[in-house]
Image 1 (tube, one colour):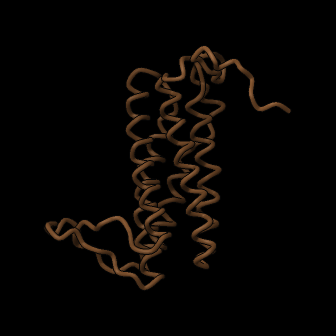
Image 2 (spheres, one colour):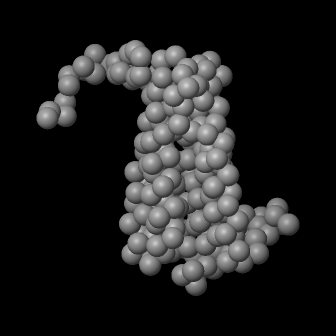
Length: 186
């Protein structure tokens, strides 16, 4: 099987049900979700190296869900009957966050991204996820697509934040508070 098709050489690419320019908002949004999926794969490797198997399992499930997000954004015309991202995906993210948060120290101020290699990777995931969410918001202003993708990405960035803190707590590395932050969390 040849990977190259040469059909994109003129600056267009295929989506489900049509072709669009490679800088179409759909491509920008799901391309960033693909980037996030790659960084999540890196975090899976680091979670396994750290012995944080439950987190690794969650992250692999998230990788599958990110493919679902991209798929739902790739329709030329909305196909609600074909959407894969449903409300339940947000529900399990919230359950995982609650479980991870139980082992985290109290948080009052903003923290700097970093700490352990796993936590640093999860903070990169968080920021790329936020960009994917912003691009999805932009997309959905003009093009109808699954609103659950936007909701999922919003909650997923929170998950990555909580998971990064859990990775540091598990490694015995304290989060570094932003020194000019006031108390923003109660």
